[in-house]
Structures are given as C-alpha cells and as structure tokens.
Figure 1 (spheres, one colour):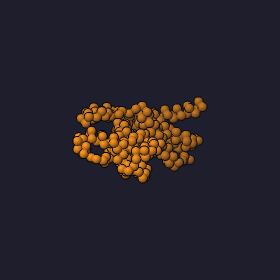
Figure 2 (cartoon, rainbow, N blue to C red):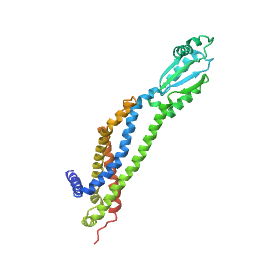
Figure 3 (cartoon, one colour):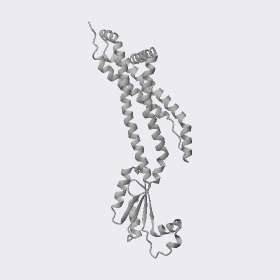
Figure 4 (tube, rainbow, N blue to C red):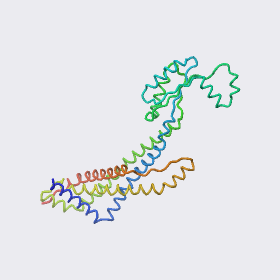
Length: 305
C-alpha cells in the first residue's frame, strides 16, 4: 500500500511541477476552464435565488370549485371529505352559498342593492389548496380534471395563474442552464484533452523510452490524469472565486432594485456545498478529458527499436 501511495504521490508532484514550470500556459487554460464553469453555475445560482424567494407563492395557488345550484350543502361536504383524502391536497374549505353572499355583501359595497334579491344567486363553493409539491402545471391540471369530473360540479377555476407562469419560466430557465452546462462541460473536456494532446506530442521521446524499459500505458497515463485533475481543480477554484466576486459586486445594485419594487429579494452567495460540487465537477471533467486524450494518443506511441 505504501508503494502504491508513493507512486501516486510522485505522479501528482510531477504533474504539479509540470504546471508550475509553464505558468502562462497553465493560467490561460485554467482561465478558460473557470469561465466555462462560472457561466452555468452563476445562472443556476440566480435561478435558485429566485426559486427560494418564490417558494412560498405555492401557497397562493388555489383551485376553486363552483357547484350547481341544485346541489345540497351535504353533498358538497361529502365531496370535500373525499377531496381531503386525495394525494397532493393540503387543505379543503367549503364555502356555503349563504356565507358567500354575506361576504360579497360586505366587501362589494352593494349591500343595500343586494337586499332586493329574493333568492341567493351564488352557489356553494369549495376552495382546494394543493401541497407545495403538487403545484406544477400538470399536477394542477390533473387535480382540476378530477374535480370537474364530478356531476355536482359546475365550474373549476385555478386561481393565481401567474404563479404557474412563473414556475414554468423557472423550469424553462433551469433546463436552459442544464443544457448550457452540458455544452460548456464538453468544452472543458475538449480544452483539457487538446492541452494534454500537445503535451503528449511534446514528450513523445520520453514516453517511447518509458515504454521501452517496460512502462505500461497505465503507468504513462497516470501523471497526465493528475494533470487533468489539477486543471479541473484549479479551474473550479477560480470559478468559485469569480462567482463570489460577482455576487459581491452585484449584491448592492440587486438589493436596491428589489427595494424599489417593495421586495426583499437578495442575491444568494454560493454555499460551501455548492463550491464543493463545482470543484468536484471541475476535477471530474479534467479526469475525463485527460483519460480520453491519453487513451487515444498513447496507444499510437510505440518505442522504436
């Protein structure tokens, strides 16, 4: 075990020394990797900040059920009890026709005019509030279809549709961030792979001698893998620093803009867990790029006798 660890430590120190001896080229490569990692990570952080602010708006999404005029209050209460037992339903409130008319008389300002009515024109109603995990558009449409299927129901209306639009926009942005992250990740793999390809060509004679004395492809590949991992790690560290700096520079303008609209929105800063994930992604992309590049090019180098 000690011999295995010493060989890997030697390969790591060798890779770090190669990077240190070419500071300008290493800096440019790390900068390209950092920019490619910063863009999707920053957009993901922004989308997460908006979603964290609007997560309580899910409670504002209600489904209002209006019953036919000939449906009794007992039938409404029975349907309400069945609705409470359904998955994705947090609260059900029955609004009798008499209460609805009293509330309308109090809030509308037409109290005296409503006194002339001989019959109550308002039906019984039921307010259904879904759980926070069941506020996606497809979930609400499914709940609406289930409620509208009852023969006692006249109309089902989803309130606060602007919340649904906001959630749809956030989902769209999340998919865009995911797609851009995949594309830029492939770009990181290509940059690291091309950088190592040029280094392999530059060290071709050294690799031939190593293979000539019995070095396997795995032995030759090891320092290149550590080089790719170091590229990804340093790029992830620089990307984390760029994200933190951007959040610090934008925090005050964003807070002023939010206050002008009466909002308490603040731009979130990357957490330690998010920084760790970014570093892990950088190292993973570096290892993938190094493995693909070395596996392709080392197989073409054979010692010449």
